[in-house]
Amino acid sequence: MQELAPLAVTAGEPAGIGPDLCLQLQGDASAPIIIADKALLQQRAAQLGIPVSLHDYMPATPRKPGSLNVLHVPLRRPVLAGQLDAGNSDYVLDTLRRAVQGCSTGEFSGMVTAPVHKGIINDADISFTGHTEFLAELTHTPQVVMMLAGGGMRVALATTHLPLRKVADAITQSLLEDILRILQRDLQRRFGIARPRLFVAGLNPHAGEDGHLGREEIEVMIPVLDKLRAEGMNVSVPLPADTLFAAHRLRECDVVLTMYHDQGLPVLKHASFGAGVNITLGLPFIRTSVDHGTALELAGSGKANVGSLLEAIKVALEMASHEKTFTTETQRHGERHGQS
Image 1 (cartoon, rainbow, N blue to C red):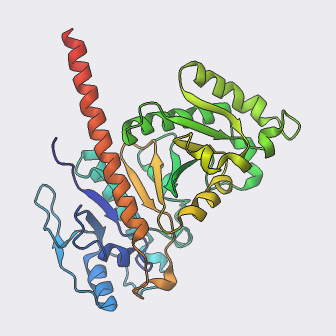
Image 2: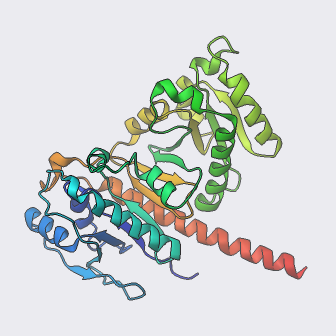
Image 3: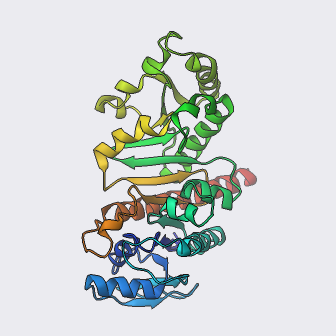
């Protein structure tokens, strides 16, 4: 099988720990392409006392083993570790745009993102709610799914960064159907799971208790789940979230779809904080990320833990390998079918 294209790693908020984490990838066997300002990496390496060898990345040229392969994107303003500056918000978004460009052309097999600071980007009068939404808009993708993996589980979200007051109205039959179809497709294509087992958490306590604690399960969720099950999808009924994450239940499924952010993520982060991976499904390319923030107080201190970034790279490489295998097998099947 042909070697995979390299991964792109965006360095995130320049005043945060993103550059610190990227420097720790020097010598990584996967030799990802770091998309960042080269001088920023040199400056942070000097602050940390880390010897670093930076190699200028050029498309279609060999990567340099043992060095940090850097695709230079220039900062807009000088950076001090730990001190946010709205003037660099465009720089942060430029690194993401360049990664998307490379993923879209096949230059990169996927992108892995270090944390950004949503607040400072918005302070620059740029509307930004997160990586997930930004990448969806940039690629004109109508629906994406946020899924986190760690602690022996995968947890996907029906709604993401939404006030709790608005959640019930946001969960519609069309939204649930779209999300479950994306989960089914991407678990098959990018995770190598032939027949994914999908557990779905109810919205209300006790999954509505037969309508006594809310009717969303009966009126919105069950009709969609019945429809997809009739098509052959291995999807559960709405399940009470308070018992859904017991170890024996998790062994029976490949992913849990929860209805809102704080229904599923506290459980996952309790089990895997610092080693979890944020995955965006539904995009035309692979994207994973760390499960933590910019940690401004740790920037330049030498105390930043690279564990989540390494796990995000590992997951992205596994996804890229599965996708390549899936595509190859699909093409071969089509060729055999065409010859018969």
